Length: 231
Image (tube, rainbow, N blue to C red):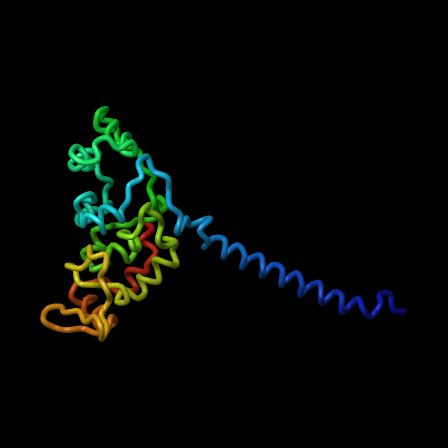
């Protein structure tokens, strides 16, 4: 005697496939959420005690990154400039601007401004600015077009998959060391050739592969090893 109707088999299969599809959609949704600006803050400007514009200072006034971020070439940290660096200029210009009152108050009181860090990696990730700069990684490779940012924001997700994409293929992003701080640097092409040590390049991969050797980058196996970033 048949206890269940024949349609029960079809219903069971549909339920199983439907559940599997639902789980897959949920997993996809979670992964997309993890990569979204809601989690990574990519493209989201952070509030600051004073509205500092990189666009004005870098593109407009031509101030080099190293004037404020003094330790970026020889330290693991880029460094946040002390108030006295700001006051080198603002003790003479814009001296009464209301928006700069927090800066003046910081200078008068000796109490540091508390800036909200924009590019912030988790504590379990080791990152060294000086290594990347001395190996030919440009500032805007990671930080984006800083000279076009009225307010600073994350250019990239800074998630592990984003870092590994570069570590697996470093030649895609390397540039001559004297161009690291050039925000308008363009990778070599037939229209924008790049000359290094008397050799002209019109292809980024050819340049990158030579710079990998010249700057003595460690092997891809080494720089994608877990212990390189998680110490």
